[in-house]
Image (cartoon, rainbow, N blue to C red; front, side, top):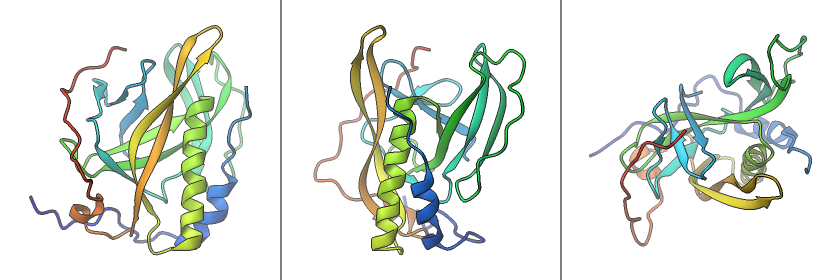
Length: 214
């Protein structure tokens, strides 16, 4: 089916070149937009939405380069008590005392928005946010690659990625999965959505969608 809508609108946004300093300012953790929420569960599966539907294998996603945000979040018993986020072009929001009941006080958080380009979920926009060491590193690694791309070719600042994973063995918690945003190509902000996903030599085998275990 033909789709002539642009991947992202750049109306009213600052110049692409102004992104580089802000992207590089994202701080990776020390060692040791869209309304649909995307996350990686504890079993290493990418899932989205209230039903935690599993992301389709091999699907390709465009990351909005102007959607990167940073700030802080306070959780209490699995519920967000407060969240203060802003564009990476701005300083992090100032923090008051953490809300009563916040289990860990304020936690640093970074995030971004993505749009699915291929598969059953094409056209869906999601938001990914991370407070964990591995999650924040995945976002900052992508931000660093994006800054380098803008330095090289500012006409194509949109990374097209697949959602991958890595893991390491934790002494107490066993196998820990961490997200990887594997860059396949770079596209223009106003690229035709139908042409945005790069061709692959062999189409990935579609797997059955399932509801992820919480």
